[in-house]
Figure 1: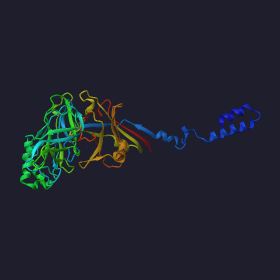
Figure 2: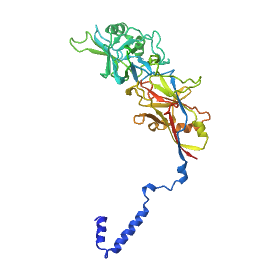
Figure 3: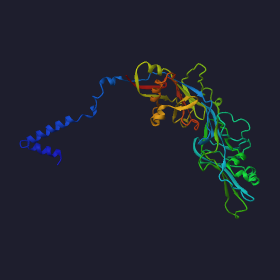
Figure 4: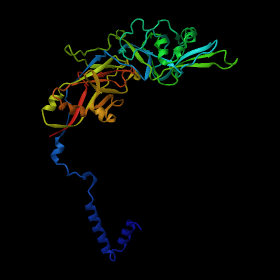
Length: 447
């Protein structure tokens, strides 16, 4: 029987059950007094003055400048990049790659009187930016790649890096319609470079080192410059077993009318390789072209916007100008520090060009160092673009706290696209000189 039924019966018999009813009401009141309402639970644990001490300040001056990269290291990349982008803001960017290629098996030969049916270089697609048709060519390297060398991906390749006569070309424009880029390789080159030499000198295929002395590697590049603004940048899953060069052949040892045998050359993870990028900002529109305005040796002049472009073109330099003096002006504890960058929407940069996520870091002794906030909890560090709010947000609480501990703190932090050397996206962001400027929001407690 429920309490409501008990109460109903009690009310029907007021005389007989008056004592029971009174007891029930008394017990209910006592029970209610023992339970604190949820809204006030623990409310008296903090003195009222402490709530007054928690404040938020957004008045800080934060400057932003655009710096052109001078060095980009892409050695031993996970993704090869080939293709081109061209827009009014950043101009033309071309990507290609150089790589060693190794034997799929040691001590393998083509047999007696081999005849080639076909040969292809296969490249497994992992992602793309745009779908403008691109034509690609494969070239033989003229010099070896060295593990002791430092390859700057944005330096010119120079002369005699590769033989300018292609050994393979795509017959049709590639748009990402298939997940494999299939480039036919010249069969005459296969005979001259891969079959005849090992017939005369079997030691070539006895070890990978011997083979790399014979074939230095390959250079793969786009051959069809864009004739109008557009994007055709393709990212290759280099370690995939689908990325390889295969020669299909027959010989006298096999029966007539049997299927071709395969001789495979692989993109091993141990292969030396690097991506190469060419940027032609002079091909941007002069009215809206990227402006580089960070030179520490000259007076800094802040524009209303700053620029970020992947593949080693542009990054932002953020200067936290008056934060340290503010922190030193009073005893405080920083509860949270949030840094926001608003997007300057640009009609010449389509939505698919937008950078989805940014990354902040410091430079210490010429090395990139992640902020403490990222190292402590990268999930709450932030950096993703909010489409509804149209800004990027970072939690830099620990970083600001660490500045308090330094005698001569470095007020610069750097912002770029996450995986900046692997993606060609770009963005124009509002600086500290914009009417909707960069915001540094600090929530703090006075001590």
